[in-house]
Length: 96
Length: 281
Image 1 (cartoon, each protein chain N blue to C red):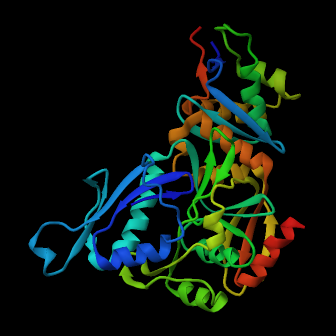
Image 2: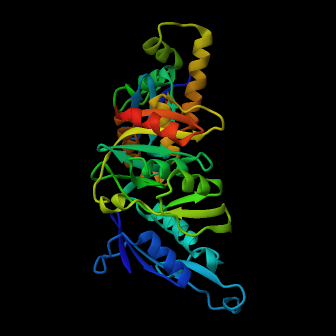
Image 3: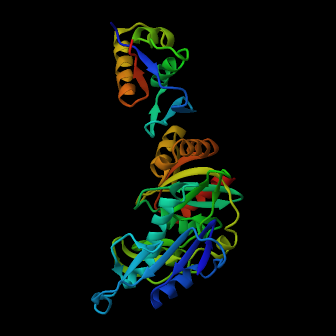
């Protein structure tokens, strides 16, 4: 079964955009992150999951929602971003 | 004695003739608020030991607690300044405290966050004698309730060669005694211009974030930097961004959104100030 990721609960992440770059504050960890547009698109896709959803988005779903490509190299890049997000507490691994 | 230093009330008890003399020289223009509640109770006290007679020392006490090792008595004033900086950084969390020189002109303020050795204090002192109003050499104090910068126009600590540079650049500036052999070398304090103290109830709004860096033999130049990068550098240069959490994040965002953001390289004070003056035009 492929992995899937969920957003943090509402209010945990605060966002600010400055000219296509994003600064994200994780209220839970107190850490601040600088994201480029691609990383921000990944995080936004997950954040747009319907509230209460438990199944999360897979890499394939994020690719379809945020990037008009199914390029395997890009999918690998998105996977790396997701793992980094997970380790920083910006997303959670879906339990289902 | 209780002094109003911007919005802060500091109760100070001296401990030696030399400290009291320098303190009076540096803080003589600040209003006494003897009946106000103090934010900080600071005492520069002499430890009760045999060293009292051999190599006299002084302790910085905050609320009657000595938090640091004693310093030589003849460096009591630099220790007071350093200790008060520490105390503000630890406690004044009603402000986002940016480690930045802050000056105002025409109602708009420039924040100059910088690491030690960047020339921040020298540039700040120079600007304070060329038409900019000194808000602080050390703190960009962004009031989290009123959403503006509060002045705390305390003395500017000049180090080593900056002392002679400022004596030459602004002969009218009042400098206190030189303190050799401190941890940062020789230090002398430049008294805040009287106008800065008289107007310390006037808050202002940030308009520019400028990261200065002294760079030998380099013509002064301002280079715009991306706001997201300025955000991270400002947050990194804060004393209490971690403590203030989401409020601090929102405050930095508000400042960065309101400001043009630059790096400033300079080797000549007049050139650097001319570049900063151009921002106003």
